[in-house]
Length: 230
Image (cartoon, rainbow, N blue to C red; front, side):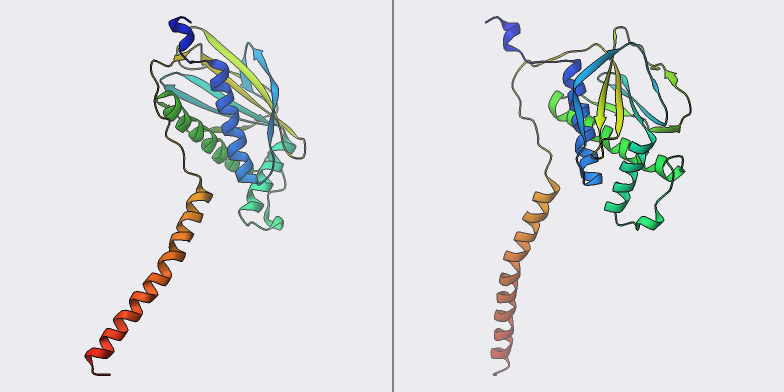
């Protein structure tokens, strides 16, 4: 086996898979529903915003690129409504149309969480850093093509289809410069703590410490009573 075969290479499709997993991870938790993506990916030549709602984020650093999410109206409303209901908002107070500013704001917030999850993964797994700008959301009636405001010598553009629990469709598009990460030596990847595990651990510790604290309190009370001759 030669030296190159020993090295682990992390390329465009791996970056795309990591981004897709960030989308499903964030949206599944936010909406408390099951969102999945197609096992097939499209190689495309142009990236752009499409009706009904388009959202894009630029990132730069270890590598540069552009991420776009294009939502149909029904997909946008389903994700928005499930997220707000999960947060405790009454159904009667939900926005009634995907053109509402509130829907765009919520999808922009979720997009920010998705890219934040992705950039954290890049720092841990690839030991490099990328930064992103604030997501921009637009309600659209026609397609708008975008170009990445960074020098992409060998651009690669991909599109992946996503499906909500109610089978509404939205699309992720990614444009990055062709890049590969090659592992030079082994390293430990720091893991993200699971919030549920941390909560259970904290509750368990509180349960253990409460009897001890009560016992200590009883000892202090007995000592006080003895000092008073009682």
